[in-house]
Length: 98
Image 1 (cartoon, rainbow, N blue to C red):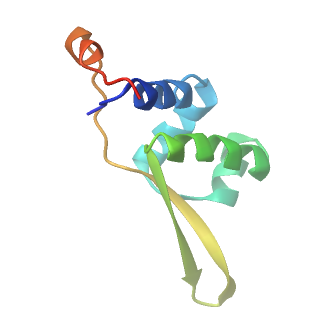
Image 2 (image 1 turned 90 degrees about the horizontal axis):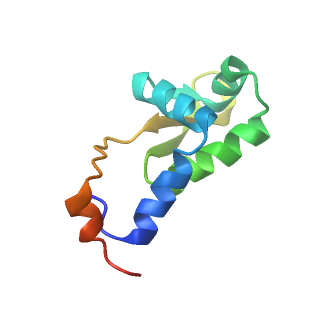
């Protein structure tokens, strides 16, 4: 549950971009390797990393580095974290100032 004004603002900012909402939707369906996700979305990896950073800051996604057999490079995979976002009058009234 969202407990502070700052926390709600970070989540709202993360979800304010249609591309980030699309990224979150895709990560809710399955985990993705950065290169595959960028290619599917038609954006650069650099731009994708900026969007993923905002989603991570909002605690909506997480990443994991993996070593794959027959590939000496570590690959970074992203997935959505379990979350339930509910915003109503009562929650907003009880937000703490930070």
